[in-house]
Length: 68
Image (tube, rainbow, N blue to C red; front, top):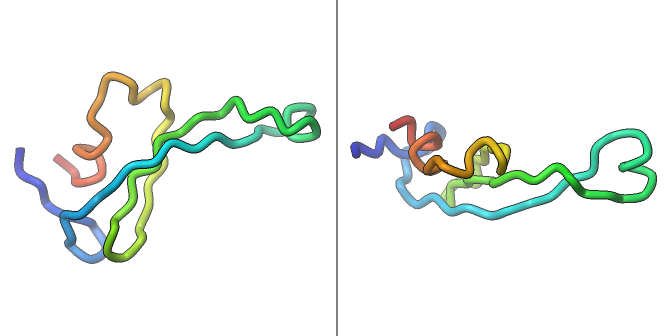
């Protein structure tokens, strides 16, 4: 695997975090957070990309972030 680095600063120090967000309509009114994402972010400059947790369950999201 050849890691290219962050597209903004070139750093190879990336981290992940899971987040949940509300949708629209009733889910927003009742604060139901059913939209789950994995955030990959550069520890150096803070550039972030969101990936749908369901879609990326079998994938290595760091590979997407680094463009591998």
